[in-house]
Image 1 (cartoon, rainbow, N blue to C red):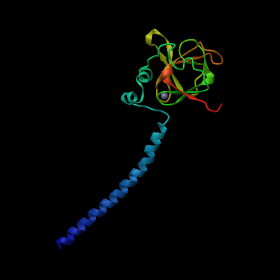
Image 2 (cartoon, helix red, strand yellow):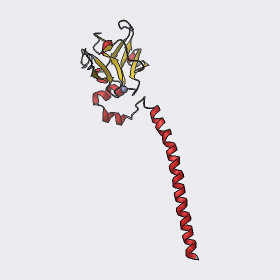
Image 3 (cartoon, protein in one colour):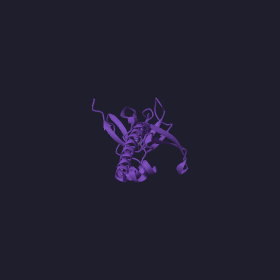
Image 4 (cartoon, protein in one colour):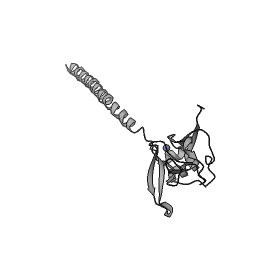
Length: 174
Ligand SMILES: [Zn+2]
């Protein structure tokens, strides 16, 4: 009799574990789509910690993109660079500018009269005793440069951007 009771208790225990696992796995599978949709809604942005950025970026890129530094005038690799293609964010690859909108401003940094729609964000910047408008990448918040109102037609804008903040992707269609 005693043995039968023990077997019975053991069976109940095994069955409850199986039932519990089934319910639990269903709960998990219901939660997964929610987790995935959360990830999708954030796929437009790319947030990383400082130490993650330090690992990915060169020290010059980190200084300008993450610490809002500025490369010395007339030293950037894209200042006098006029080849057909696209300029991408050096931090995240976000497409920022097209070569057709790049012009010779003479200011010492790559200059564009237009940014691609929704590729950059503007923020008022009062640092260094100046009233400027800072330009950051809309995807990773990386510092790119500033925008001024002394640009050419058709926009009258001058996006003054650090070469270090950008990568160039030549267009191979032509
Ligand atoms: Zn970016």
